[in-house]
Length: 153
Image (cartoon, rainbow, N blue to C red; front, side, top):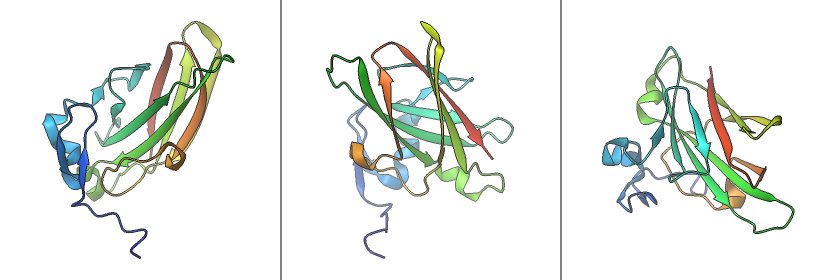
C-alpha cells in the first residue's frame, strides 16, 4: 500500500512560476494562470509552458496535462514528448467524469503526418514524473507541431 499511495499533502513545485504548494492545491495555484488554455483544446508546440488545461465539452470537466519535451539533438530529426494526465479535483465528484483522453500530434507543414494515442486519465494529486514514468511517451519530429486533446467519457 505504501508504494502506491500518493500523498496529497506532499509539496510540489510548479516549473512555470516556481511556486511551491501541496499536491492537492496544485490545480488551483496561481489562479490557474500557469496552465495554457484554449477553447478548442488545440495548442502550438513546443510552448512556453508544458501545463495544458483541457476542458470537456458539455460537462465543463477539466483535466491537467503535463507535457515534457526532450530535445535529443539527434541528427535524424526526432525528439521525445512525455504526457501525464491528472483529473482535476472538482471533477472527481462528477457523475460524468472523463476516463480517457485522445492526444493528437500533427504538423501544419506536413498534412500527411498525424499521430493519435488514447490514454487513461490519472487519478490523484499532481506529481512530477521522470520521463520513463510518464503515462505516454511519443517520438516527434523536430518541427513546430500542434497538440490537440479530446476528453472521452
